[in-house]
Image 1 (cartoon, helix red, strand yellow):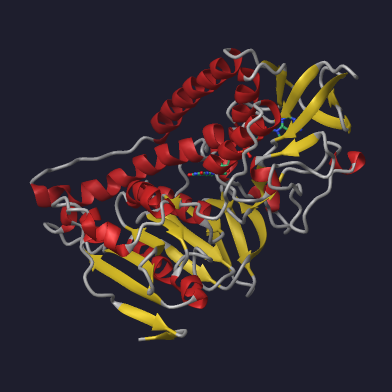
Image 2 (spheres, helix red, strand yellow; image 1 turned 90 degrees about the vertical axis):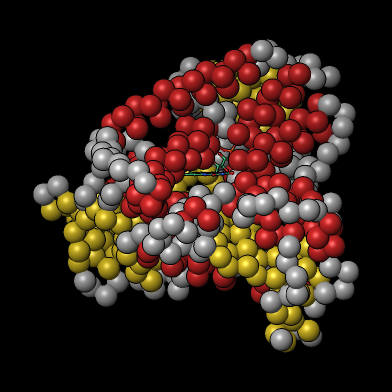
Length: 458
Ligand code: FAD
């Protein structure tokens, strides 16, 4: 049998790669992980974690707005450099914890860029040397897609947005996905005049329609300007401003322009094609349900496989890979019921089918609650909470849950446990409400708001 330098070499120390490396090493494999930037990957360094910290920062604005109704007088000022530097400290702390978590089971960390040379061979670009491995795991993630327009280099992406030297007076964000709406509410909450420009007809395509409408209203009530069905066609500098030209020829100046126009798998420039690793039509690495690519010794997990671009999914895939290949515990990840949260303001969380999807599958009952969160009732703040529960007409199994409002993510995360166990409406009803909470609405729904029978809404 051929002997290799390592049992496993992982390319990319993000969510998926770190988990796979740690678990494989725990099973006794000799593991190295190669990372060209920082340990922790997108989520820790410039994704979920700093994003949520900035969301917290921006939400003080809403609290200050209603503070007066509770008798408080607040003289609030915001300092961007303080937020950025405190964020940097926290990210450095987390990165160190990731490094320690890898070193403890004996993973060798190699700080370099890796390229594939063969099914079992990797070249380290800076060190200019080769390593061999019985198995190679590609966990190179994804990167922002930037439209190919004149002046595109003047725009920023989420990568740069976290570390702007100062807050711009205004920002134009192109895109309608979760990153676009999250950053729009972050900047708007911090006092920046914010505009979203999106080629679609409404933000958050693919989400339940009531969530999209509710979010749209929430964004507008925070003063965020929405421009639909157009795109940026060019950017140019004008003094400190960036002038955006839109598809209709109109131009407008902004303090900054950010592209949140989707993310593309990191598949280029490190030898995938040369070694013969096949891609999907969407340009991600094609893998089977055990995350194995078209080359048997090469596996891939996380965003680079384009399955669901979320950290917990990358982690689950990385763990399942290590269990399957090094732990003698074949494990297949079920991608069918993945919950997701959008940390916009208002927040959205969702699991399962949208109303449209569920109605296309068969007869359903739809329960909707709309109410003002109790925290706002002493003030004029008009935000509404929307909760939508979709159940099968026959038997009452929960097919979808969609919540818009404070702590939506926390609520849906817990409900996801019950939904994953095939909870029915009767199971929810059996729980005694906790009062006063928002989530009690979920266990106190009486008659359906409306139903679908044979595809027709009644
Ligand atoms: P990554 O974490 O991207 O890691 C890939 C690593 O590979 C990187 O560190 C990169 O430097 C390295 N690399 C690439 N090529 C090479 C090479 N050739 N050699 C060496 N190293 C290489 N997900 C959520 O679940 N919740 C959220 O709230 C959330 N918010 C997000 C907010 C933003 C702004 C962004 C951008 C993403 C967010 N995500 C969120 C998505 C989440 O970050 C990703 O799904 C997750 O990081 C994917 O993990 P991964 O292991 O596939 O790749």
